Amino acid sequence: MFLVKTRIGPSKIHGIGVFADERIPKGQMIWMFDARIDVRVPISDLPTFPPPMRTFLRKYGYEEMHEGRRTIVLCGDHARHVNHSNDPNVTDGEADLAARDIERGEELTCNYYAFDLDAERKLSQGRSTRAARKSRSVLV
Image (cartoon, rainbow, N blue to C red; front, top):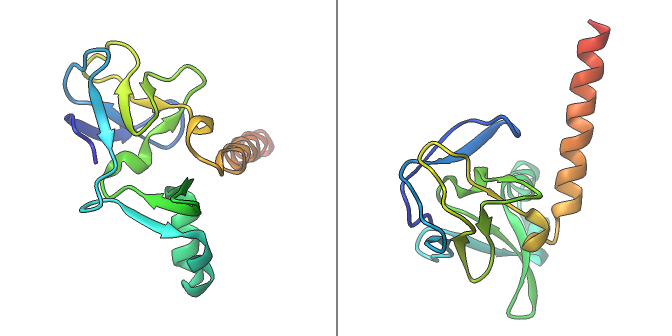
């Protein structure tokens, strides 16, 4: 659950992004898992879900090991829209912290590889989607 004021909007990185709605100083806690808002689903339960639900969880959740089990975490707020960056302004751990001062209106980014066991699949899909859009625009 976000612990700072944020908003969602169009991203220059990809689709929708999350933007700081206040100045966030370096080191401030930004996000932390909260079972009252966020959901953790064991990967082993996915086959029991209808296909649209599985697709949603794989797209908007992130995979992690929790208590020896592989799980998908679905953020209950718009943290699910934070985009990847190789130079993120948010560090990932038990709690996510501002890696540097973040100005109001700046997009929040994180390094998917630091916490999402499924990062490679998600990022490679994003690359192929962008390439497909680019080739379609050339053909039109």
